[in-house]
Structures are given as C-alpha cells and as structure tokens.
Amino acid sequence: MTHILNADLHCHSVVSDGTLKPEELAQRAKANGVELWSLTDHDEIGGQDRAIAAARQAGLPYLTGAEVSVTFANVTVHILGLGFDHANPALVEGLRHTRGGREQRARAMSDDLARVGIPGVYEGALKYVGNPELISRSHFARYIVEAGYSTDTNAVFRKYLAEGKPGYVPHRWATLRDAVGWITGAGGVAVIAHPGRYNLTANEEFALFSEFKAHGGQGVEVVTGAHGPADYVKYAGFCSEFELLASRGSDFHSPTESHTDLGKLPDLPGSVTPVWEQLAARFH
Image 1 (cartoon, rainbow, N blue to C red):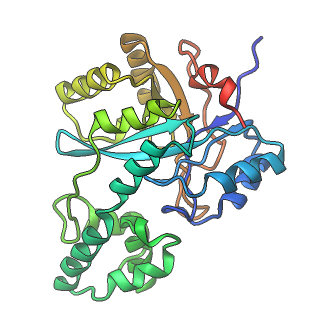
Image 2: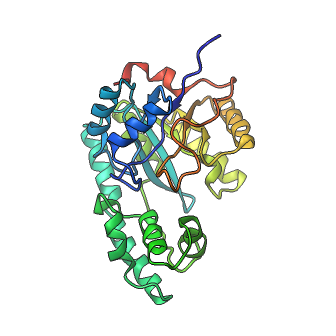
C-alpha cells in the first residue's frame, strides 16, 4: 500500500495574520506528524527564509508558499502558490503591489467602526500586527474582542467585518491572470484555496475554474479546514473535470482561533493526484 503523505500546505504566521512565528509553526508541524509543510502568508513571502531554515532544522521537508488575494466576480478569492522561487523579481514586485492597498482599507474600516461606537480600532489592531503592510480584518477582530465589544473573533466577523456589515470595506486585489502568472513565472504551481468558502454561483464557480486553468493554474485545495466531507467529494470531482492536482492544508492561523490544527486533516480522496507529486524537485 502506498504511504499517504501528511502534507499541510496552507498556514499563516505573524508575518501576515497568524499568531505564531515561522519557527514555532515548523516545530508544531513536526510535533503533529506533518511530513511536508508550507508557510503561505497572505501576499507576503518575508517569512520564507525563516520557514526554510526552521523546517531544515526540524528535519521537515518544505515547499515555499504564499496565498495571493485576487478579485474575481467582485469576490475576494485566494490563490496559493507552492514551490516557487521566492526571489523571483516579478513575484516579489507583484506581491508588494498587492499589499499596498491594505493600510488605506484598514483606516477606512476603522473610521466606519468608530461611527458605530467602536473607536480606535486601527491603532488597537496594530499591536497584533507583525507587519503593518499586512494589517487585516483578523487583527481588527482580535482587538475588538480584547476591548470587550465581542466575545470571540468569529462573532466579530459576523457582526462587523463581513460584507454588508458596518466595518466591511471592499478592496480590489490582483487579477486572476496576474496571480497565476506570478506564481507559474517563478516556477511554482498555482492552487485555488478553499473554493467551498466563496459565495459564487454555479456559473461563477465554473468560470473561476475555467479561467484559472486557462491562465496556467494547476491545482485546487480539496481538503482544508473550511471544507467538510461534501466539499471533499465535490472538489475531487472538479480535479477530474478540469484535470487539476489536489492540495491539502489546514489554513491554520492560531492555536486558539483555528478549528483545524496543523496536519490534523483527513487524507485526500483516493481518486485525485496530489499536487506534491508535481513538486518533489522543489522540496527544501
């Protein structure tokens, strides 16, 4: 019987909106039995050298990673890049440009929240931010809980930070073509992250997968923290329909906030081809 790899190719550190350092994530992954790991911070590769070094020290095979924010059909979609050259100039510049709009968006969100009786959120959130360029709704949620306006971060999102709520400000991210192009141009594989999370119609979802494939995308995250068993079956079917590789990742952010810990995921369905089979030459 073929050994099924415990790969976790989706998680976040303090370099974006996680709460652990890359070194702590490497140790946690190793302790949890992960056999192939990737750190995929949002629109940021500043933690990659630290992750590579920590994984090497732990004896943990590693793939470079990032989660790129894309606007598609007026919805924010995330594209994972895996196994790329993290010094590639076009990728580095593309991610820098994508990060650029976050501060203005964060200040506008803070202004909106002040109008509904929650002042000082931008300043309060900064204490949770390892990289001010990457201030996000997760940092806002942590501060709002600390300040006593809500009981937990999930409740903050539902009440204040989701679309249509007082603190939600839309942002236009990279295009799908650009994100896939940066990743593949740097020698990596592009993967649609947690597709079951997006509020897309069936036609929009078909268009997303069709365009992604046409631009050179090669994978889809089938098993992830935000998916349930029905999603595993559905997106394994998409792998077959669109001839895509399957990925697996917890989307772990924090020991206290994340539902799924590093490496604590069901196996990929047997019908799919794992994305890491395409990337063996890129392991660190």
